[in-house]
Amino acid sequence: MASVKDLRLRIKSVGNIQQITRAMEMVATTKLRRFQERAVASRPYAEEIAGLVGQLAGVLGAELEGQPLFCAGGGERTAVLLVTSDRGLCGAYNSNLFAKLEQGIAGRDESLLDFFVYGRKGYRYCARRGLCVARLFVDPRLEAIDFAGAARTARTLVEAFLSGAYARVEVVYTAFESMVRYRPRWLDFLPVRAAGLEAGGSAGGDVILEPDAATIFARLVPRYLETRAYNALLESLTSEYASRRVSMKAATDAATDMQKALRGVYNRKRQESITTELLDIVGGAEALR
Image 1: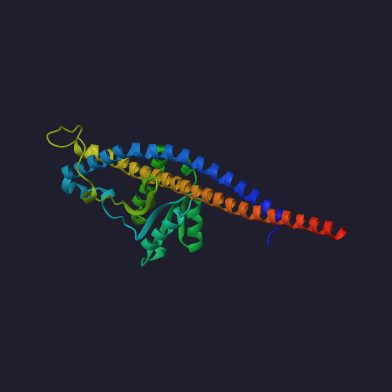
Image 2: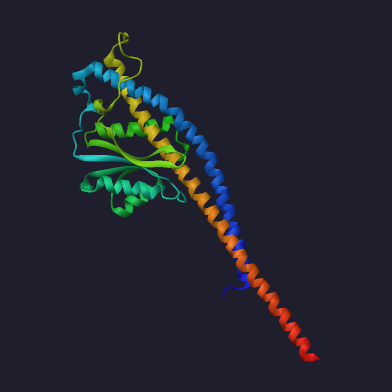
C-alpha cells in the first residue's frame, strides 16, 4: 500500500505529465488549423488541373499512347512513396498506415519493391521489415513542406520512372477528411491513367487552344503530378497533427481522471493517518490517568 508521501509524489508527477500533454495538445491544435487551411485551399486547384488534364487527354485521344508518362515503365520493379511522421505521440496514425502498407504488399514479391520514404518512422519500419529503402527524404522536413519541395519529390519519382527501372510508381499516404477522420490510402501515381481523370476545367467546347493541345498537355502533366504529390504530403501532415491532437487530448483527460482518483486515495489515507494519531493520543492520555 502506497504511503501518503508516495501518493503526494505520484499526484505531482501526474500533474507534470498533464501539463506537458495539454501543451502538446495546444501546439497540435494550432498547427492543425494552419495545415488544414492549406490542404483545403489546395483542393480546388488540384481538382481543376486534374479536370483540365483529363479533358486534354480526351482531345488527344490515341496520341497518348506515345506519351511515356501514360505507358507502363520498362522495368519490373515498383517504386512506392511512403509518407509517415518523423515523431511519435500521434496515436494510431503510423500503425494504421503500416497496416495499409502490409495489406497492399500482401501477395507481392517484396524484393521488387523500392521505397521512397518521407518520415523517420517509415524508414525505421522498412528497416525492421527488411524492405528496400531507395531514398529517405529529409530536406525539406515534412513539417516545412511547400509546393517547391513537393515538386522536387515529384520530379524525383518521375525521373526514377523514366529511367526504365520501374514499371510503376505508387503512393501510400493518409488522406485528411475531417478533424477526427483520416484514412490511409494506396494510390497509383505513374503511369498516369487517362481513364481515371475526370473531364473538367475550362478547355472544352469550341475554345481555341494556343499553341496547341499537345504542347499545353506536355507542360501541364508535370504540374499535375507535382500537385498530386503536394496534396499527398500536405494531407498526411494534416492527418498527423489531427491524430496527435486527439491523442494528446485523450492523454490529458486520462491524467485528469488519474489525478482525481489519486487525490481521493490520498485524502482517505491522510484522514486515516490523522485518525490513528488522534486515537494514539487519546489512548496515551487515558493510560496516564
